[in-house]
Image 1 (cartoon, rainbow, N blue to C red):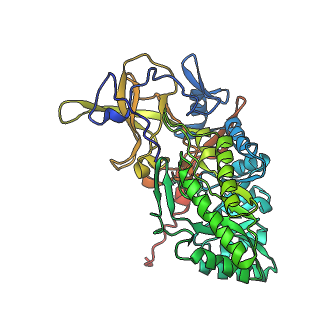
Image 2: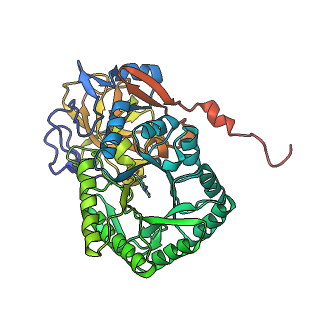
Image 3: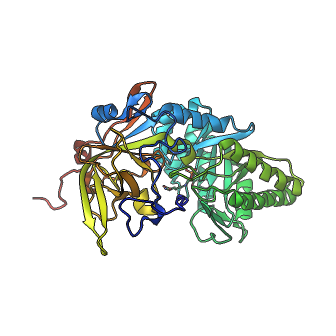
Length: 471
Ligand code: LLP
């Protein structure tokens, strides 16, 4: 999903058939500050994060492990809240959530987007202010809606007629008027630089603008005394670098807001433009700053509102990846190094690490690209084009498809993969009964486990061992 940012072919080393997308960098030991967390640097060749040597972190916490640069994530969160007055920023917890992160998000003044009962439970366990929580999801159960209303969440983004009926009933039993946004399918899907207008009606989220469902949903909310219609929501995709998709979305959402005003005399209080703001995974990925993005989105909505003679509503966004993605790295230990001879006589180097698709499914699932470096030392050995693979029983178990690593990488070395904060730990699995890795926050030389490593006992604890057939 990341933009392919490798226009040049490889310049030397072990040139492989599919190497075109991976240009040999000038220095394989270099740390690109656009990709790595702010406090990552090399000290005498060894990688440091948050003032602690990565090998020391690995010794204390084991591998694989995710390390969070807490100063970095706080800085990113703050850069959104400070970007533009008047914007509400909800951190999308699906990217990664635990109680410590929820507290960081609360401290930095953001709201929180949750989309399941589980995410809500984490938020409430962290004592996240409920009025700053918004609840998403295309199939919220009565139980989830009940817990959300009971907790006093700020707003619920409704996604179906069934849900509007369900939520109206739940809110009525609590004698509440629940603030509600209506999720609108604007007919735009945007991923990175690829943008397809009108092509994305055929999906499960939201109410279609084109067939009039969106307006009917707003009317259903207006008709429900226990619901307070607060605004419109649109989310067009993820890992987006260009704002064209947002422009079309804003145009269509504002047009709907104008129609609601004209037909019902109701003012749309809030427009939420969703998440999706892209980050740099590989050199050349070039996302805008939060300030640039929010100013641009604001400009687009201002223009659209002016054209229908409407006051600009409160604007909100829901970045997940852009806040947590660049702030974490995953550290693995190398277990095996294998050169495989390909047709034509070239070789491909496979470096196997002690994790894989159970802690990062994104490469296998989306063909995502990552940047990787040798963490326990720098090396001046001639770089070799290398594929980093995991330890799972599946040939698609790839962590980094093509990367240049020094030719002397050997078992026992540590590899660090950048920008693994979003959708890696949160999408982790126990495939092959591999326990999920810990998350360790590092700040000013102090490392603190915020999610502990899963153990085989944790996995066995779920296994009742009971047979349906009595012995
Ligand atoms: N708001 C809504 C309604 C969403 O559905 C999402 C993401 C976000 C906000 C946050 O989007 P972000 O800013 O993080 O791009 N697993 C995929 C990404 C799925 C995104 C789902 N929705 C990945 O690993 O790339």
